[in-house]
Length: 79
Image 1 (tube, rainbow, N blue to C red):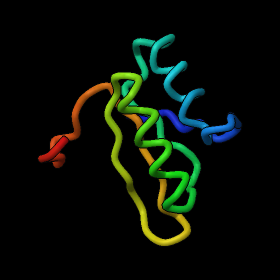
Image 2 (image 1 turned 90 degrees about the vertical axis):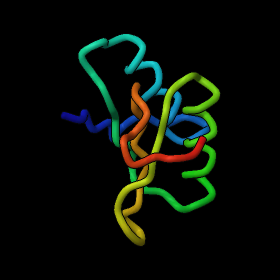
Image 3 (image 1 turned 45 degrees about the vertical axis):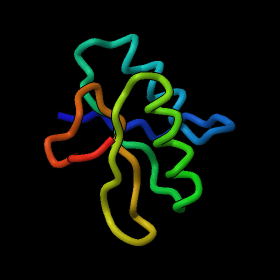
């Protein structure tokens, strides 16, 4: 079960707000960020990892977005 966070704005996209919410609410396991271009998605991935969380991209084209999660996604086989 994910929680969608759509109204947060920060200089690094909305990843910092998502991370703060994951830290504050233990019942939230993942947050899907707003769709963004590849440059901002990369920044969001880097922010999630630097704060001790995991992330992955989902969707296609202009609907592609980042999901920040507490646990390593089962389909992730690298980093």
